[in-house]
Length: 469
Ligand code: SF4
Image (cartoon, rainbow, N blue to C red; front, top):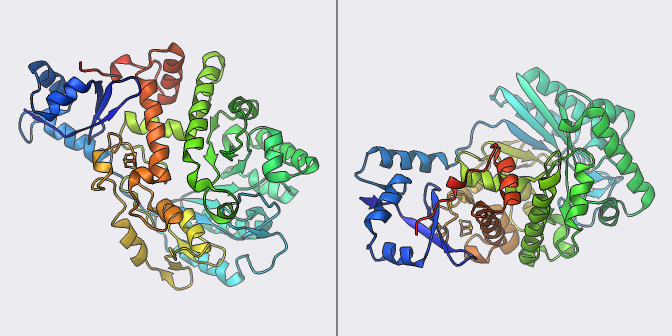
């Protein structure tokens, strides 16, 4: 019998978590670790490892093929380009202190698409062969250029079989024409609600008339468009985060039960104001507190709530192929399945790459809509975009569930070869995976109830939390 390589990590309860390259896991103790390291496994160990897919009898047998299948299913392969983020203007009618995209004042000229840029974007979209298309309008505040949004929408509807449009708007000033656009059946709204109203005012609107106007527009959007068409994100300053319960209540009271907590991003304007680079421990502590509060909330709530990214990571542990989030994939090949087109027609592989380029760190652009795409820089980066052979990640028990984000590393450290455990990406994901495994191995009924809801199953099956002692 041969055992597939096992990685291990001590857990807070004094045991040891083991995981293989295909994402299979179990808990044991230091005695097992010693037996494994010295090749002195017992007959009972052998039976356990074989039964649970961590070993095989001979290459090509069912256990071997099953492991290979599970391993391959966890790898991300980009599909056809069917998702484009468009930035028709950088102008914005708010000036949030941590704005991630270096927006400019609403009345500053020269930061919108020109007629030529709009025509070139339409030509670019016309070269895409995918049958369906998702367009996300970002800014600045994209509704300041409703005319461009309308032109793009009309073109896409005529070009693709199926279209979806997401408008990322601050919902601050919504004209009747913008309401009409947002009310269309294939248009969705993404906005920001930084927790309770007081926190939102401190971080975004700065005075109560503006705050009241936003809250009225948000509540109208939910009432007019329906819950499924409006999503909101809270951006959290880890140095002074709002009470978790206040965020949960601000969202669930509006019928929004998926909350995607985001720390202030160390990019764009945020770079100048906040030391977000060194804030991962404060963030991790807050995030864990938020999850505990959600568990308490769900115990009694009629409609449960979730933290979107935590649930995404949980599902990546429990099953393969969960690659729907662009920040957590392996390999994280960028510049193929989707791109971003900036206000000046330049094309970027991701929104973060746009910000990194805009603040002058690196030029991660991939050409522009006038002269076409060039992937040479990005494909050089893509050659490093896998954690499978990374000298730190190969020893990590969480490697199969984790991913890699080279643009984030470039943005924070100006290089991609910083030891992983020193990076914000690694520290955040270690903390999330530690928390998830602590919950998977918990016998607290409250925890199990939330885990079942978040995993999408009627009851959390205790046999998932395997032991070999
Ligand atoms: S980035 Fe960190 S948590 Fe993720 S696989 Fe690598 S070492 Fe593990």
